[in-house]
View 1 (cartoon, rainbow, N blue to C red):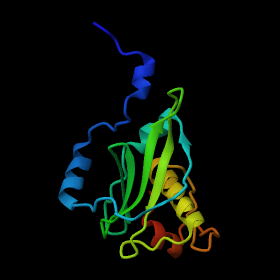
View 2 (view 1 turned 135 degrees about the vertical axis):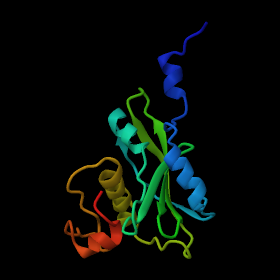
View 3 (view 1 turned 120 degrees about the vertical axis):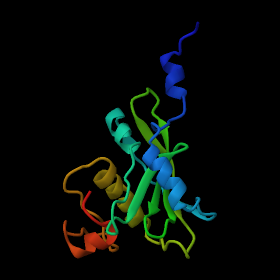
View 4 (view 1 turned 180 degrees about the vertical axis):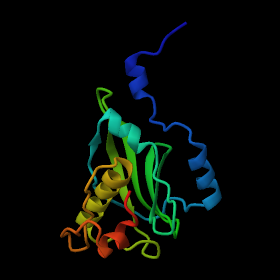
Length: 167
């Protein structure tokens, strides 16, 4: 009987542990598929093994004030707006060379103007970073960007409009 080498395990596709709650929500809510028009986002990030585990666990909206549904499926970290169900951001994650975490291998933002109005790439990249840090990695005191790329005070109405409730 052959055993899998470390190298083979590292090359295996990145998968999240099965979560029946996420599977049920994805099926029940009827989230939109990736948009036909996608614009490369140029979002770059690397994550440690511990952070990778957190990325794979999902952020599920619990109330009307929750504006995002974020989950991992088929190699992609998927960011949907919770009210519209539109697929806004996609990040393809891949294993790092030495098996120590993951990196963003590809990223895009929804380019359908009827679903999302992306026009400030610096803002979009900062928003993705804030969503990851605030909702998936549970970092304290995450500042969400404003449209003019200045910071929005934590707890402000502007932050609530962009983010929803505190993570």
